[in-house]
Length: 180
Image (cartoon, rainbow, N blue to C red; front, side):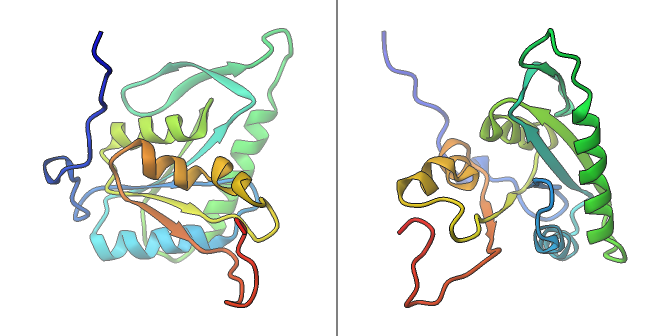
């Protein structure tokens, strides 16, 4: 049986920036700089909306819907788990504060499962021009562990949309980068 080759990046597959939404991967208590960068790019490209998405890895996707939303359930179905609604509310309040006065339309999606897969599905569903993620702060991941856990690196290798990394902490050229 021949090995399956996924569709490769190509000019024919490019989603233009003008008039297409942007997708931003977010986490609780993330620096406002990620949302502000997305808002700036959205204004520059006349994006109709910026979609902010959080992927809960402690929940399973039951069904991915055509609009990019997902029905999800806790990994352990015997546990009554409504803490996800608290996380959702925290994130929407965080995004709302960051985007006050920025003049961009935004939407929030609470997803579940594997982060890169969930964001890729949403990006396809909304026909996003790019995916925006924040970098890890120095010290969060060391060595190759940084690359294994970097959502942006996984996205850059597993789908065809551009991935924009927003630096959240830089190190001096004489210092050590997170992967060193």
